[in-house]
Length: 214
Image (cartoon, rainbow, N blue to C red; front, side, top):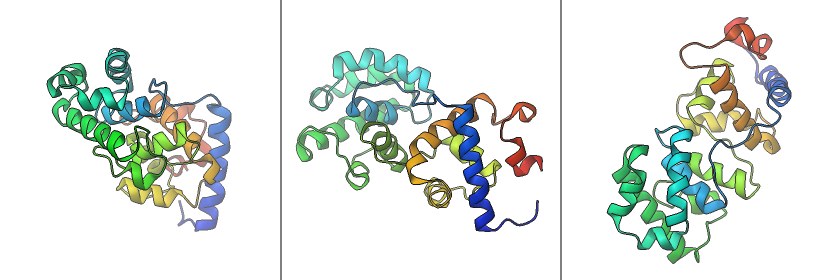
């Protein structure tokens, strides 16, 4: 495929947004949550863990430790035991308790609503912050997980490897109002079609727009 101008790439990106909207109109966050704090906790736990496993863990975790006050006051070993099956449970438990303490002590018990404040919490990088902002507070954000990284690179919308650089590369290509839902749709597409090892390109709705197939 010849080198693509930024204008042509933006035009193709808008077509991709449209196809994904038609293909996955009901795409949404796969994590189960009832409020912003629960989504924050679930997203921290989802690092290097499947959403399905996290949902199993939080189904038992939230009734016991569903508020920042409860997690902050809990014994570390109780949190570790509750989240053990998500992997890296000691570090995650420290992140959960530290973030919960800061929410209680610095933010009046409420999950902060700005990216800058969210990323000040332990265990919260831009990806987690954008998940919470986009799904709970209506602040558009691009969630760069492994699916977003793989699919957007295959689509030729970025050549970057670093999640923050990928986010920056996509911002001028995807309409801001679409950032959150675009992330959900790309993640769904990555799970259902554009698999890491065996992408099913023969049934991909984006085949006419994908440099891999042109």
